[in-house]
Length: 431
Picture 1 (spheres, rainbow, N blue to C red):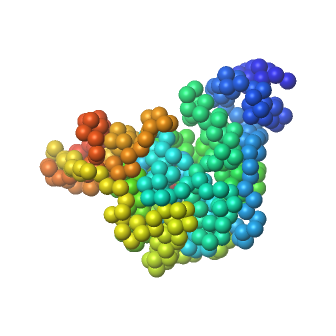
Picture 2 (cartoon, rainbow, N blue to C red):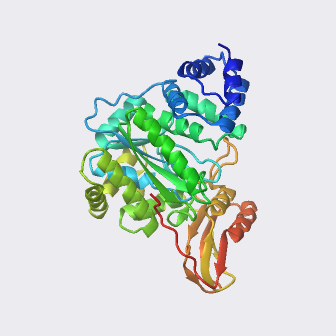
Picture 3 (cartoon, rainbow, N blue to C red):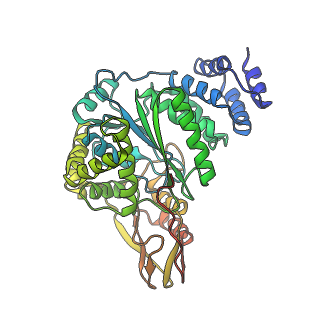
């Protein structure tokens, strides 16, 4: 068997066997298969797709390309949550402590900013001292003491995914459902989880912009998880406008702290409580999602989730005082309002454009080695359906670099639309 034969077979639209996929991925990890081989193969997969059995085999090979965490010393079910990415998508920061406060063990592996979307690790690193890469031994200790840990993908967890993703990013093969499925699940299953709650985003600010694409990804994730005997729940949620009001790293951490102290936008609460409830239900703590939702609300209202967030921050080396004093977080030197030029109703609040505007200020990356400014971003004063008068502030711009401000303003200008009549609001959760 040669790499060329595997590429040719996939190019011609045939299904690869488990043995062929194993040969290809293991060969790549041992340098017997080159980057140019994998690049050609990725495009063949992108164009021709994969069967469920192929996707399953690829997921297993990528998971087993490195270490699989052994969490057997920790009692109970281990449940994680993952989002496909969006704007203002800060739910991991509140869902993990809520679920942990309700008795769920949460080994959460998360990522950095990608394209126009934000990254959970970048948000957490705006907390002074926070360490997103503790050792495997320390991860187990943190889970035992705090109930949850939020970490980045380490060098020894699903290393094949990290290498393949870097190629997907530069070969225009990111938007492939089989490749997305294998990428997500190989990382998650390497963390030793028993259950997974997926938040598949759809809308202008999502990688799956249409409901049809979101449904297709959901089916793929469910099929592979079931075959690997891992329980999964998938929610499809809206990303037509930003989730919550804050966009940007420290700003989103501050909003999460507000949430855990009982002050939060309705859409952020709706999605976060739903995700946490399904995690609680998957862990076996309750018999129904309704019971789990009640527990999640109580964890917030009684302050238990906020205490748990402090414990997670402390265990990972961060300054836990930010929970009581968010002013310890980085703050931009300048804040100015972007104002409505006409009166009416907000009929568009484009998530992707607002995410790009936040990135233009320095909150995200255009290249892997770009340095993020944790203080900058946007705060939405008005969202879809809101009535505005001429001169009302639509969003607050938190900025440090005057050179970056012009590009951000141009994107914000395009993101908002105001008309005489309101639009019908879309549901926050589709399924």
